[in-house]
Length: 156
Image 1 (spheres, rainbow, N blue to C red):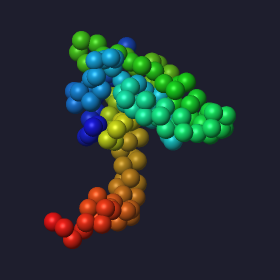
Image 2: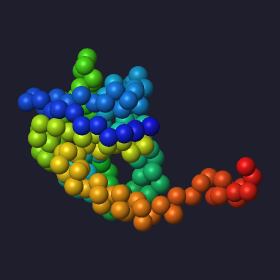
Image 3: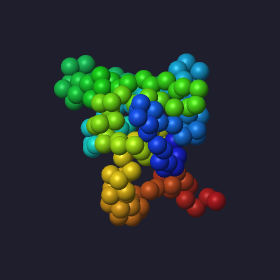
């Protein structure tokens, strides 16, 4: 699971160190790296491992093959994604177009979101996090425990 928020330096060659706990999540032996794509929700990158990409594929397979929404999602996620391998220091080299899309200028903030993560410019993330906390506060009552959902609230 991708957890925490970490800001790392991005060097002149576009290399950035992926947090070690993020590397541990995607380390499945088949591919030693991450998959990134431009978010269609804002000026940041989304990413994960091959397992996440398989989850997206499985979900899309439930839609009609010629559904316009399915095709749009396939293009926005799969066609624009990049597999980036780790070097010996746990870094990846971000393609210039992805770094520019997210406005990464010397630093990158990795934001863990459970099954996936995001990469933001630190300034953009800082300006965004206040709204996120407000929205989370407003929606905290929507978090339902598994016990309550399964009808076993009283059994402790």
